[in-house]
Length: 186
Image 1 (cartoon, rainbow, N blue to C red):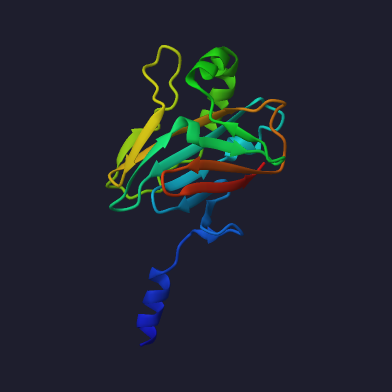
Image 2 (image 1 turned 30 degrees about the horizontal axis):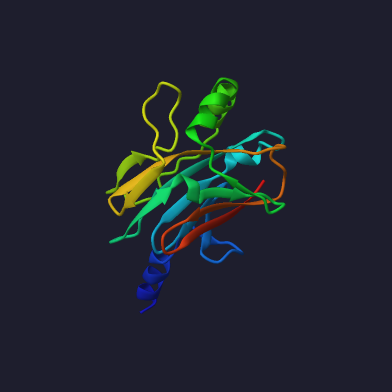
């Protein structure tokens, strides 16, 4: 009987730690996850946490849909909310292109300091988020279709007028029937 209880206790262990925000768990120092009915989202904010004063907020994100589900995410439904409550939309490809020359050193630093985002079932095919591409690097899309067979990863870029300020930020994604809200500190 004691062996069965020990096995059940070990099998139920997880490295996910609940946060004060319902439905959001901490997977690492700078990794948060929210699983919703339409989308399972993982947020990496290591680089963002060291970007106070910068004009561009860069977040690492991985997205998939729970088993048996699918979802469409439109660019205009992705945003961050600043500590002061301002809603900042995901940058457009045009804004990213115009800033790219000055952003290149920052993007290289962000690539070096990123955390792995492979928190989904290994059977899911990797895919890119597709909202952004480097100038001349291909096609970007204004909509991402998710399902339970794909795990899409990439960076999201937000132009923050006045620069990134310390405090509690929120990554938001409005979906057809639900929403993702992942608060994170900077």
